[in-house]
Image (tube, rainbow, N blue to C red; front, side):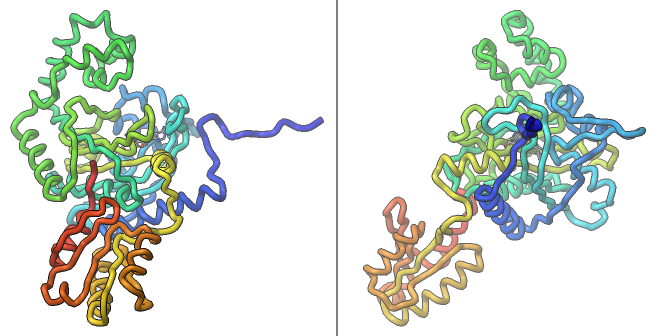
Length: 424
Ligand code: HAM
């Protein structure tokens, strides 16, 4: 009689040849972008002390109260890490990374484990890439983290995303806000879902995160955290928004955005995609100025994000993008005449130095043939250059997707192409 065969556990997935090439392509984008932003890689163990995760993420969170894979061996309690922020913070303290000077800009890619109910975009073993900027409370640090995250998706061609932004305040602001929420929800308590009734006592802010139908009308009328932020939190939030504006990163303020982990202070954000269904967050993060002290370090402000690899691939698939297949140039330089060709060659060098993928014709073909080639290569932009443009010092930048043209100087062209992010 045939023996029973084995299958993976529910929510655990094999990545097969044909898929692994796509994973590698995304990983390559992450490593390249990290190099451009000067984040350095950190690799921490998959098993961590259970107490670190419980204290770091918060006893009352879903992750700690019901989704951890744990076991004991001898005296020691092990947990399969459900996320990597607390582990990175632990490593920062354990190895005295603060003594390396400046702020630490760290990133990671790896498997995480949560015993959630599996569905599309939600697995029990999944993979995250993320980054932590430790040692700065400046709004510029929040902007740097968000820019890094957004740039990775932009490079992969995922542009139909929305960045949701909020400030969840500090303990002082939050105390006032929690009281206001309890005051508001108390008379409605019997109409709320069971889970929201539980959260009413433990963490009323998480009621705002409820997906239950019956809670929605009450959530819609609930007080907003932004009305309870103290001056320091408001200033910080304004500073973050100003810097995102400077970087050309669009965002939608969502005063009801709360995150499922307890360590957040001030900035909280999520990058959502319309292509993911009910699990619509590609990634999320925020500031956690109290975590490092909470797990035994000196008070150290920090901010970070993490994103799901599986959801990244779902979004690619929905948009018809195959990571790693047929790389697309950002720019194709179309030249008319020998002087233009020489200018083109020099300009390729400057564009590539700023990380822009660029190419041109190397066979002296007609302008018409070059435009056809640019279309075939699916270039996002063309720069068109001939004698007249060289004399004027201004060149045509043609957006090949929207078919519009502008006359710009080389510096203007680079600035136009460079902004790392243009999210919807
Ligand atoms: P998180 O929101 O719990 O944050 O997870 C970040 C991302 O990981 C989610 O947006 C999602 O893409 C992916 N993810 C989470 N759970 C699953 C799952 N069960 N299956 C598939 N994908 C999943 C954190 O983990 C924080 N550590 C982020 C952070 C870093 N905050 C500050 N620094």
